[in-house]
Length: 288
View 1 (spheres, rainbow, N blue to C red):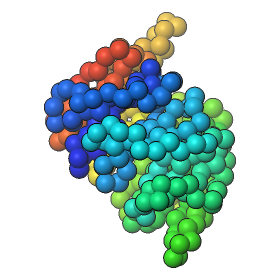
View 2: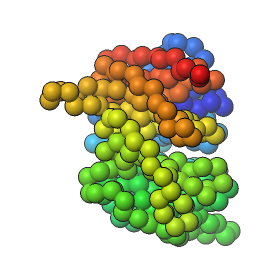
View 3: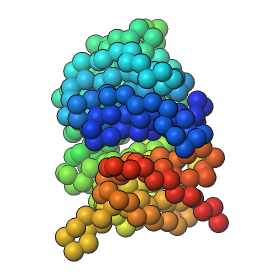
View 4: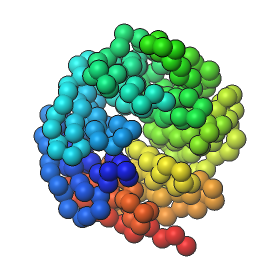
């Protein structure tokens, strides 16, 4: 996960370790032993100074300093994606039952009592600040759109649309609002990208991918999405990364050494980092 403002890049490993990189240089600044199992969910705070990490195999979320690697807080009974909200101090954290989300007050470093239940195991979330919408995608193949509001100290989420476009087990692995919130992109693990009207969740169009998708990374304020996953070749899972333009549908494909790579863009759109099982590869991005 990369934060462009502070030029930090953090990479989670199968071992539970997390590398904190200076994203302007090809070297690791430091490594922390964050989890006992795979560190597969990492997200920055909006200012880029801190980041959350957790693992599907543990029931706690950890908050770290991106600058020093210091562990600042362990949040118990939470597991799964973390998402920013339109309020700079408030985040959504998935609880240990995997289908409920709660507000987390970053300023007070405290979970708040409000709970909201999704229609399946939460796999991914996305936020649009202008429209105050938050989208939730699940392992049941559902997509939900919620609207965030705050009146004084009272926080609220209200569900405004939901749909089940994918079969159970066809996970929603990526979500992304077009700025302004009128459109929403979803990525399903079976290998499809769909564009939706956010207000109604009526499908506008689809773009195919050529791999079974494990994770998706949208580059903010551009039309690029990077997909990581695998293709079955004679019974063997072969890892690939596919870079797709949402505006044109054109794609570039890279072979990966591991069938579940983690992907991130590096600054200036010059390259794409792929963190694999025992190595890290950097691929140039062709702009023509």
